[in-house]
Image 1 (cartoon, rainbow, N blue to C red):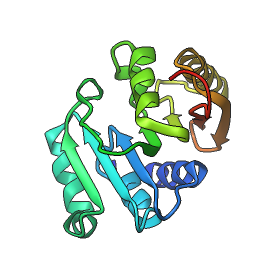
Image 2: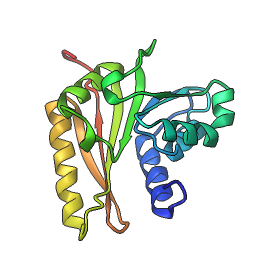
Image 3: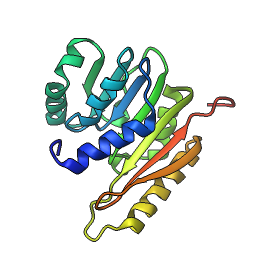
Image 4: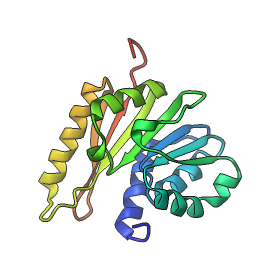
Length: 183
């Protein structure tokens, strides 16, 4: 997966959309082989990058790929699921999930938990690249709308979708944690 050109393009693209700053604290859920973790660590050079993945094999692969950043204590990877989010001492600036929301039990509730972990004005990016046979731009558009609806239900604001023209197209849905009001 990590060597597939489309996966590398998709991960670089979404990290650029998330606008990660040097001091940001970022969480990726379902990091797989760690391609986006590496991109995030390259941007959050004075911040902290966290990752959780339910697969021990992916934790091992991503740990090898990101060994230098882990040794420098800038990246922390944990074997866990979205149901078992670790405790973060301070609020996060950004959250990323690529092709994983569809596997989450009760995604609106999970997104609400993630929203509470984000600082006011923090950002989230949910990415989907439908891989079903015959997937088209319309398939991607429908998947993007589903992600937008979930984010709306979870209380996120300023929701927008971006499309990366791969085959099939990739949708990146970005949103902000509101800066005021109840969390």
